[in-house]
Image (cartoon, rainbow, N blue to C red; front, side, top):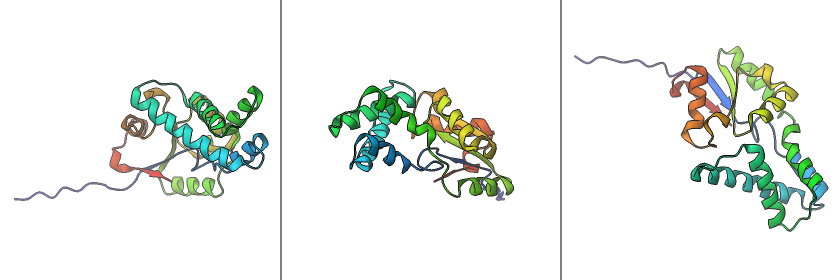
Length: 182
């Protein structure tokens, strides 16, 4: 006799990345333009690429620092690569620009619709805990989400599997019940 197993495959929670998803990165171009006139977009693009490369490299070789430091290191690498001179204050202002990015158009509506449909919502980000809290408070995301999760507790960056386990631990849901928005 064959037993039929039924699994509830509904998505019960949806997590979003912070930078580039809930917060657009285009405003970084303007911040970079102030330091590198005529090359702000290029600097922003190279900076983000170096930032992600450094996060992957640090995870691979097991040399943890929080994402704020990765952001500063990525900026330094991008400035050097593009031969852009920037003083300490300029570098500090640019790195801090990640904390002042605006909420993406429509993001609040999507989060509200998901919650109205009964889904839990959350942020799962490489951002340092302090940055995540500051951004969530400044944009209202703390009111729109059920979970604010930084990679800091697992000391690894995306796409390491331990990062995604944070969502299952926070919600108590199996992986098949959790979606990740883009």
